[in-house]
Length: 295
Image (cartoon, rainbow, N blue to C red; front, side, top):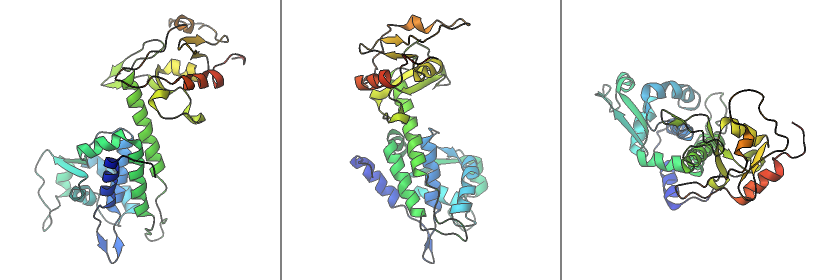
């Protein structure tokens, strides 16, 4: 297990302590399945609250496979409010079903949305490791489960959730540190609050062992990201842009040549974030920057 802060460990304890319905010695897995679905949404950067009508469509196939057969998606969606992790909000009345405290499904579809409570969501979104550990814990609760002839365990999802959460964290934090601006051409565009055609780039490529760390991140537009990964430019020991001697100027179009950016210094981040490490820049120059091979 990853070393987590005490506050993160406390939150994991709340995940471990969720109350689950037991019948004839069998624990109903509907809450873990619902929480795994919600963690996936956190990892992919979705809004904190999801309309029940949307959640039902996404959850019901999972519950039919891994939950108690015949259990509606509304069951855990509503009852998770008792575990200190979840809330349901409504824009209208939620009259209960006859003889039950749970609202009618039609009312939930029309008026309600739910998800992690705001502090829980913020804590999960800020820590990919916590998100992954919570998913692993929940998946573990499903492993002993066998329903008819279905597989005994859910296909591993916690690693996928952790990876997605880390990718979302890295992109968000690197773009914020560099004000969403390409370090080569200055391209900066926000469309509805989201950066467009801008990438958070691993200087030491992640596929080659580079870490998801702020001192390994830079912001490049989509074009310059491709050129950087192709080794057609890098940053020297003085942190100024160097162009591969194999670079051929563009044959058409009006975009300034990459050569015009030669000598431009890699900007430092704002917001107190660490700047790109010299060792990561050196790795890129040694392993990616092209000096010999023909393009």
